[in-house]
Image 1 (cartoon, rainbow, N blue to C red):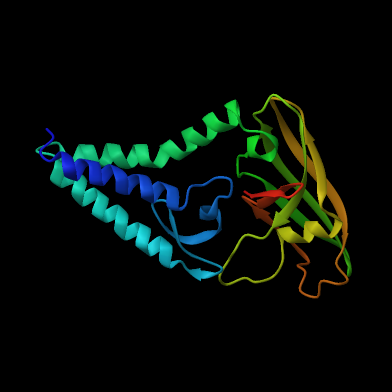
Image 2: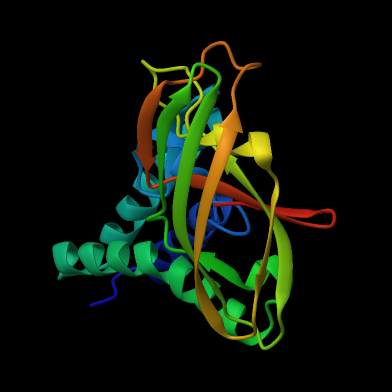
Length: 217
């Protein structure tokens, strides 16, 4: 089945390099991207990423080397490799968090959080947010929670980040526990001329801050 070991080793090395270029830990840069290829954020609010283009080209070369290293089963091997490539980072992160991860590095977020806003007066909004966090470590962890806006190319007004008017929010997660965070805040938006009157956001993005450490999720 293996026709050329040198090509196989080169392919494995290139896949490994590709995985490390934008490894989704401690920050996951993919969640801010509006154009992606495999594990590479091609474009986000900061523009195009040359490194992502380089990584994409490297992955294509890795696939070519993989095909050339085999005498048969090319398609199924490539598909299996891409599946492993997609899920391996998640498995490694989970293993790390459940074994030696501490503090905010042991916290996971399912990405399903939501925020809804309703105008109360001309200068006040009622903001309600709900999100689920899990502490995988054997020790409690306390951190500050900050909200970030999801990037939409055609929409530049603040939505989720309006919650930071009353923030940051100090959160404590007990050891090996899962917690649904529910916030209900009356927000004074008099200093936010472009604040929305009503609206909401799904799959909200957050930042966890613990001392000098932070994680974008």
